[in-house]
Image (tube, rainbow, N blue to C red; front, side, top):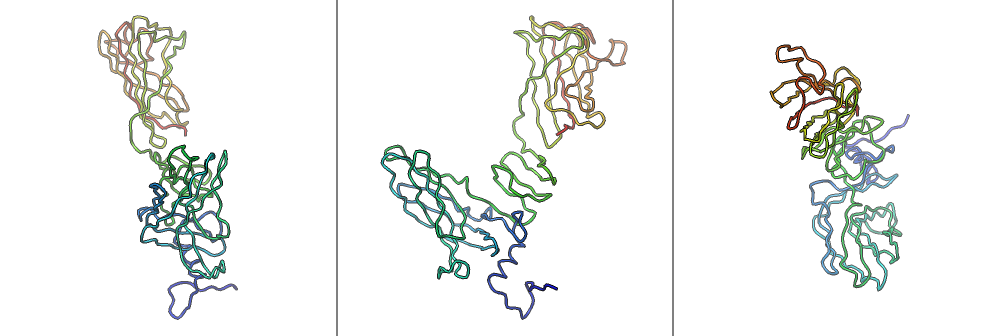
Length: 344
């Protein structure tokens, strides 16, 4: 039988190694057994890196730095750090690195037990890359600094390398790509969408509402295809929330519009789910008269059809055609608003 010492039991003396392992239970994992995800804790200062002249300033923050086989090191930096930029190379650009370093004598035999922020100048080259700290075992990148050749402009800071971490079950913010080795149910925010890992792929759980996205529908006829013409308009717009799509199509007929033959279809922004009639929306034709109709989207379809009354005295509905519910002409408008479940 294998036994271990859990936390919060009277009389147990736990060393730093054991406490670091226990702390791993409070941090999002990295896909490895007993592993954890390094990163800063959102909302704690953020370790913002800025540069003015040759002075680099690193803001305060709280970070968790994982080291394989040792667990997590929690590093609260309660005040800012000031570092000095190395002068630019005469003719070549350079990429420098700012990182958070953890010293732990029991791990690295450095004689130190502390955390500090470090600046490391890279090697000037035609295609420079950020340096890797030599002799430092436990660290986490905070920022890179792009340093142009002398006279080529001012250095610029990028914190794209800065990782975030949260408690298990938390949502990782500001991720430019999906976190590696995800677990089922993990969420992250890429700045536009909230995504959830379903065990094999990432689902868009919710899109941050914003302006509708335009798209150009394709208008077809079951006999011959119609054409909007040079002075007609056919526009579409949509919002997508996960697999729920809300959309609108507006057709305005011009003097150059031709109407084809057979019943009409219009492409939708995303293919419909293959489960029943995805939904049905409303259609309105403004011609000589005003006609109210409905939208039909079949399972798995990539197009919709508008249905209108057969005549002013017959409320039974059928596919819209060039002459149903009335003969289309210049100035007629077809407005269709609909909602449905997309296939992906």
